[in-house]
Image: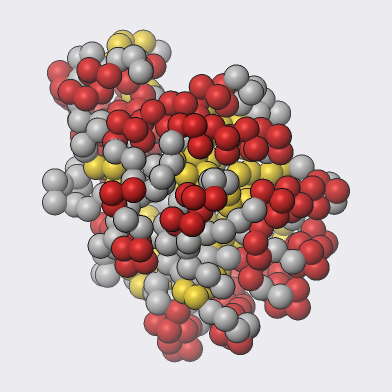
Length: 451
């Protein structure tokens, strides 16, 4: 591994930092920004605008030990059916507030496990969504799929409603690693789901993998990558496992002594990057990879790559509307999050039809910092002149921030492209660099490992 010394010196192997899927990160959302803001911001969406829609399904038949998402286990379908009925009420209430001619550009079902829904329940949810929202041109409908819980009749239902992108959870195919994270998933199950989708014309397929898992080695992870290469997904997200048992109690089942250390994690990430680069996958940002035919690759090349709660995206919409417990919405004015617990979510829908609980109202300085961080995270670039043109009142702050970055990290940046460019070797430091810009960043904040 080359260039380790400056990475070590700048704290890559012992620092923690937010993932910066939003700015400010969700742990800075405030209870004071709630339902009143939600209603005002929904009503202010421009008539005729294209929006993205996210529906959170928090249920799983099994709770994987590595997962820190807001999920809950269930062995029966009754609470799931009840939950979908509540979500449909929320959709109807929100649609009444939105202007009449808003169109849905993207639809994403996430979780949890969206494929836990039986076909009749999924049919009810999708009929409600498509009755509420007219779709825009080039509409994309994506679903997170667990191959161990994806019945063919449910996949047929999704295909019949126009699902054209599937995001398949893999994590790792090594049996020892799977046993250590509570997620048994055979290669055959995954191959069968991929083939089923492709037989129905669904060719846009993403895989999610994790590095830094217990018992994971470069040798074992390279075997997982070889299996992945055989299935040839269009896009990959390879995230670093975040061990945060103080936030996700199920992670106490993972023994810390079985986890690779920070240098071993870095070796895993670098090995994956080298393997995938040799397989015609281009690196996108810090943890995504895409074939040249994929829309994420094209967004990276034309400078329209963005960052949202799913990671890197080519989603061009300015507004994201989240439905379901803990779902986050993004508006021009800021962020709004629904009540997180399903019981609290249901109570709010029962009371008013809306579930807004907390959020954050952006001022111009926040928008400027958000823009800087997105440029760094997506393009490893600090475009001084473009940012000053976009935020003229903040021009001096932008210049001073650039000066401070050069002073703090003189071996990380070079001048170019109308601003500062991160040197290629230093790109793994980008979350730390973003943290330097982040005015909310504090040493006391509990974030995840920077690599």
